[in-house]
Amino acid sequence: MSSKFDDIAPLYDHEVKQAIQDILVDPGFQHAVKYIMPEIDWAEFSAEMSKYATKKEFQSRMIYPVIKALGMRVSSSMKLDNWESIDRSVEHLFLSNHRDIVLDAGLLNILRHEKGFETTEIAIGDNLLIHPWIDKLVRLNKSFIVRRGLSIKERLIASKHMSEYIHYAISEKKESVWIAQREGRAKNSDDRTQDSLLKMLALYPEDKSFIESLKELNLIPLSISYEYDPCDYLKAKEFQQKRDNPDFKKTQRDDLLNMEIGILGKKGNVVFRFGNCINDELDKITEPDKRLQPEIAAQIIDKEIHRNYEIFPCNYIAYDLFYKETRFEDKYTSEQLEEFKDYLDKQIKKIDLDYIDYDFVWDKMLEMYSNTLKNYLTTIES
Picture: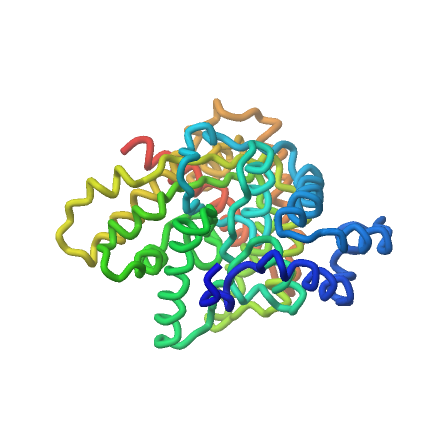
């Protein structure tokens, strides 16, 4: 690997053994492992971890079984769809909607591993690297670092560096890459690709046009559908906090809680569905104003993501309740309707505010679950 990317790239294999030793002696890592796996024998676990000499060994022998067991615990089923249509002769940038901070990429990679694909490299924001052991752990797990909270000048330098690295990973390292379509999750599940992300991806090579540069990445939109979002009540709580106090900002503790609930909370059925590589659609962009091309490319990606959602009964129920209609009453039973209303009520009761505006947060949660169906319908009916 080119050393110019050492500041953001995953660890080299020759760094793996030392990184593992550093992590094993960190009290924070020990606490996290014992929290997720309370029955663990630490001496056995440390001895097993110490055997790994490459990132691939670490992923296949530790990350895969841990995330697989976790996935089975928090989901009713996990499915990878349309993987047969992926061209295996080239590497891809998989750009997806963002539902869970940790498990979006984690579950994708265990499902890819089971289909005989190599795991992807993963883009992760440095705002999540709260402790040094997390930084080492994610780099062991083939993550590269997206710098956040920079000045405008620093951001441009970091964006060029990131763009060059992603092109390098796909074209030269022959590694596929996963990245979310936006910074942070869409709190109301109205998934939209940020134009600025696409502009960043196309900053390199400098001598190529936006469309030529984006085509080099063989970009495939990926739709992630979780039947239930365990963080739904936290998002509804945040909507109320921002309504009541426009200056409200989440704390680092809030981020950690979101990560924890997202990882350990029930998700119901889970579907990852690949769309089509967008290169042919990019060739059809005839807009002469180069400033508008990223917006058109984002729309192409969003349509692929929206049309490939898995629509669950709760999405139909939420839509009918939110819009006060009976349009989809044939898609669910009266039992499912009552179960979903009961589910929302139980989630709302978890909100730890002195005053909960019940009607407001109820509506916000219905909106989250209905927006998936709304975007799907807009795409397939257009």
